[in-house]
Image (cartoon, rainbow, N blue to C red; front, side, top):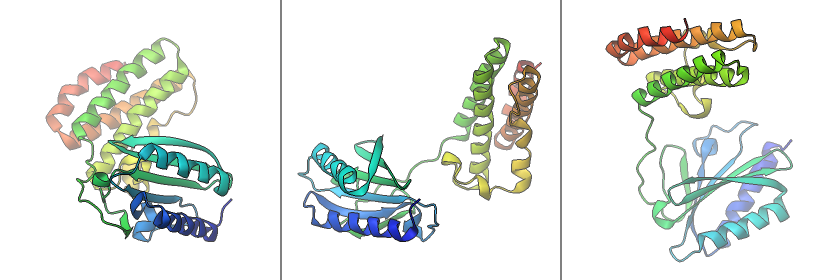
Length: 246
């Protein structure tokens, strides 16, 4: 396990290296460190803006090699947003290091967790929250597949689909209460009474009767949350969705 001091030392070293790399025109802290909210479990989040003439693939290759050779990386994975790649490293110390490599015109804040360290940032549009109507649609889609999975005796798939209904309900709740919705980051900020309503939708075992019980509970809480968004839509969906659990 890494210590906060080790994490800070590595982050400082990476920023110092970026300052000496002519292919990197700017750097920023992102994540919890950018807003003074780090704790002992926080990872390292950095964003680098590439110089206009930089070869992104070559920069990625060189930095990745250094992470393995000098900083104890044991694996990495990528996530893309437009032309920006977020390379996520797992170190042998269990520390996670996220580094975004953005073209010059894509380097800038998309939310409050962006603290410019050097260089110039370009104004970016903020990340958009999902539409509640889209989340509702995904909720009933998971419900349809939960029904068929239970009927087919595919108990693990049924558990997965029931959990999918529940997770989309929780995202709807996060949007309604104005807390972060992605990856469960705002769930601890929801009122206790709100999350208590979702607890019955937790699947306790793979027994068929238990799956059906949790499925009914997930549909109940989905319909309740739909009513918070659009009462008329909740009425339209109610008979059909309850038929799924009959």
